[in-house]
Amino acid sequence: CAPPDAVVWPQAVEQVQELAALCYRCRVPMVPFGTGTGLEGGVNAVQGGVCFDLSRMDAITELSLEDFSVVVEPGVTRKALNSHLRGTGLWFPVGTVGAG
Image 1 (cartoon, helix red, strand yellow):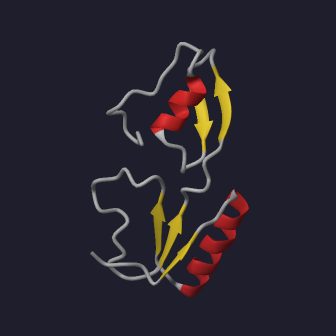
Image 2 (image 1 turned 180 degrees about the vertical axis):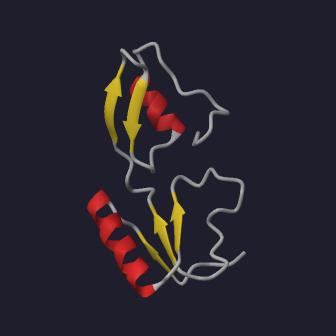
């Protein structure tokens, strides 16, 4: 396990953009972290860098029942999404890529 050099908790897309631009200018690796459901070691900071903990970006911003689509921020968990969908006849099943 290789921890990052720093962790940031952006709460808006604009903050992510600013932080990403800063890391790019300074050639610092960025390590994204959403809800912690990944099993493939994606949050392992093998070259140090800044971990972008996106768990506080947990808004469900758009739901279209007509085309079965939903727009969510990266910190939205499967349980939170299913709670939001309750009563619509839709659900986000376990085992779907990105489920949290």
